[in-house]
Image (cartoon, rainbow, N blue to C red):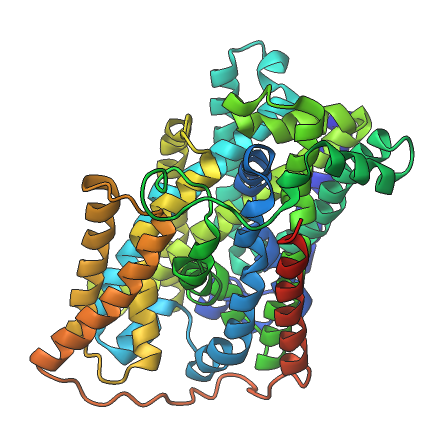
Length: 532
């Protein structure tokens, strides 16, 4: 029955997405890389949510919540603030310029080498950090719930290898043959499935704990460990112990928001959905609806971890990444596990094939057409994009099994590695918009400085600072270095943002009121849960 429900849901998603794309032209640049610029708000929101939420969240964040409490919620809730900034400031500018990639903006604002440098950094970050961790956590979750190794009569490590291979191949097929629109449609259905299945886990657990009353169940979980529900960490981000701290509260005011703004407004695999919007109104709806979902998502990726502590106590502290799979097996009826694993696989596929599609877009348009074949037509660019997706998938599948045994958990490992790439790119994009005096030379020097600064401070000197504080310091120093270099070295011509005339740029009439609601809701959430 579990296998049947898995096959039915997975088959339905593939069939529906294929049927929806039956008349689309996928051999053109906009058709393959941007979904024909036809994505609506609901599709964008569903795709953004599932591109972001994958098994590194379900496994990693619930494992961290089980061990460290609800302080991890900051990664999710503060996303709403970044999405407000994206909807009101960045989306109008991106769509006005008719961009396909973020590096494309850097070429318009600075020069070609800056675009190429950032494009290479993006591709490396996808292959070295995001893709392998997504595949490994997904395989870990599926193995723990479905026990693939027992079914195939192989060892657990072989079962995980096989799962990585199967999921990686399926994800690559989606990205290679369907382009962004296939990814977006499958994301939306799987996103709905993730919300349903993800909410079922805590609801069924609380029903069981409360003898049929979920509120009684929640009260029992809270009474068991009220300190776990406090969202404000007492950890120190400076001095002894700061390097192993999970999320000190003060980092919300230093590097965390820089990271959030980068991820939700500048990261190619996220912003590509916005660039594929049919108009500005739908782009803003998509971003702000995602903000609302991100505030609710802790019910799926934090609350189960707290419930796990009620069930398992401290028995899994040495293996916190197994808490969520164990909880799923404990509370879900057998016939629902197939549907749940299908949704899990959908979440893995979404993040995986989104990153592949974005990397292919960046390489085809930013590197291949610029340096290898300037005369390449649209069909050739799509073909190169498909080959790029295939090769990157092979690399990611090969690296994935080696990310096991991260000391502070897989989600924490992903964030630490992201700092190498995210903050330098964020500082250059921000400078491109906010500081007209920063030149192309200054931008490149700032990029190099940022890359070296984080690696030296965190991995070589091992300074006693939380890695998110290092992000904040790095961002400020990068901006300073760019200004200094720009003042000392030759200036560029003044950049003027031009309307490409590609889309309707009328804003959504409720964008500002909805944004205000998200900001107020976030602040109230912290005021309430910070006093637990």
